[in-house]
Image (cartoon, rainbow, N blue to C red):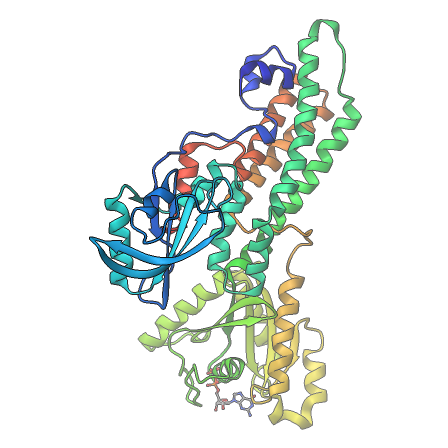
Length: 489
Ligand code: GDP
């Protein structure tokens, strides 16, 4: 974009400002779009029934035409062609070739997909044939990078593809889909647009400094910044929930030996994962069971208990238990209903809280089946604890109840968020920075600071928000993002 056009947009005589405040639709740094034809195997490595080889770049249809038994030079976009891949007059494989015409492809470039049989030999032979004919192996994430450079999607959407591929639960899948459809981009776009208008007005005033005019009503501006700040903070706060849904929630199961932790974990997973015995200290290390509950991935980790021990191996287990607790999103503290009084329980809660201040604690008084006559007594004894339940690892109703309780506690522990949930640490970082600079500009406005300073802070906010979607991006950041993609994506 030429400088004169920018001048028109920002109505400012100060060139130093112009490099930052850009209308969001105008920026995509087209520095890395090459004309090379890239190719890669896009299906998972190894043998499969079918494998997919992808090519992208100008003239890739002509390249494939040269090694294919059918004429596809003038084939329409989205058409599929059955034929043979030929090497030295020999048929390498029977394949299906799909044609994508520029710009109607994933990358926005002319592209071809070859569905071949999934033998490793065939895949490698076809790839080397394509390379011999002028293609080159793609770098990790290069297809997505081209899609970004060609304006097919913004950065959050390309990042969402990686999340979608790695999603392991309904919750993670839903969030990745939301991001891929541009959920967060739309939200950020409108916030950025509002700030750009605001910054333009403040900067317009700077141009008329001698006349002492005020184009931007300060009261309205304060309202606007407050509004954007609350939206940015809401997005920022949703990251805790987003990262838990994306990565899974660690649930540490702790308690004295013989409380019934392993039995409960077995029942929970319907599998004999932990060794159950009535000799105290059976679980010497940690046992991990991943489980999907109502679309959220939980990782239940049984530990060696909290008891101090002289047994070296068991002692190592206790050290691990502490580590597991400190990193958990939730702690289930289980105890034998008959064995523990509330003094012990208070000590245990304090112990857990010292290791982890933010985790929710679920207290389970186990083996209630052995104490049916004393239920009234125990009800009184433990009645004042929140999140305490009388359960039995041997009863399936108890197990189902606790599963629901765990999901309920998980949601209860999350801050209220809107529809858009942030899952990406890079986005979170940028939102945090935007929030700090919004606070600064609010303070500046409330203290009648000069427009220069306020505009400077707002420019920073616009920059942070733009860096999320890639509207303002440095090449080294892009390099870092795409290098974590796999080849063929
Ligand atoms: P851990 O050391 O905490 O993992 O405890 P275990 O799961 O190994 O259980 C210790 C003993 O308690 C075993 O003999 C279990 O069968 C028994 N047990 C566990 N849960 C219950 C329960 O709810 N009711 C009864 N009656 N026994 C249980």
